Length: 243
Image 1 (cartoon, one colour):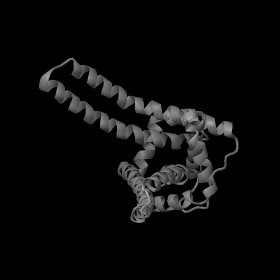
Image 2 (image 1 turned 180 degrees about the vertical axis):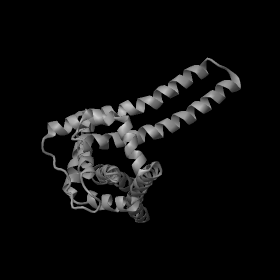
Image 3 (image 1 turned 90 degrees about the vertical axis):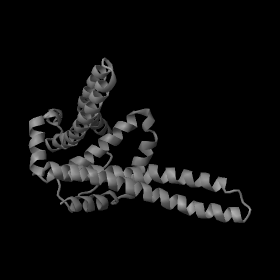
Image 4 (image 1 turned 45 degrees about the vertical axis):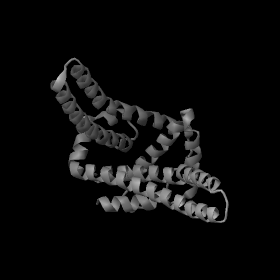
């Protein structure tokens, strides 16, 4: 099941390179905040398509129409993410404050326990957060459904906590591998050019700078958007496994 999700999502994300470039352009201006919500809103549309679709289906990539709706969806998603992450953050702060009032080994032991509990809560919060967003999408965007804890837990129980956690770990690994491989290829090519230039008496620093710029452009306009869609599609398909 998990491998099928990855295969579908990897192929789905490469369906339209124009979409990747458009997302890259939006990402370029994400420091203005508004585009950042548009990107999040687009990823929500990818999730929405996935939760109503099937693995190896013929779902098209979402379009960019109704930008206001896409922006609103992005805001809703960010609020959901912040709300869930607040729980482990608050727990950690409580442990830190209490540990700060103590001294010696007792303080250190309490902080270690606090960090372990916080980490466990963070994993659960991230899982509930992603499944909550999927649950919201499946229920026609009803914001309250993102916080329907009992329903979301039932979804995760049906899919299986192990399957969910394993899928997310796989997504992290695949994301890192793709990013590192692309970076290694680009820098490898320009390292060869740089060394060749040095042999010919040309200063290689300019070549290396050009390589860094091209790598940044590829990451921004191709790899970043591709991985963003890949992760969103995978999460949506994972949710659909319980339906």
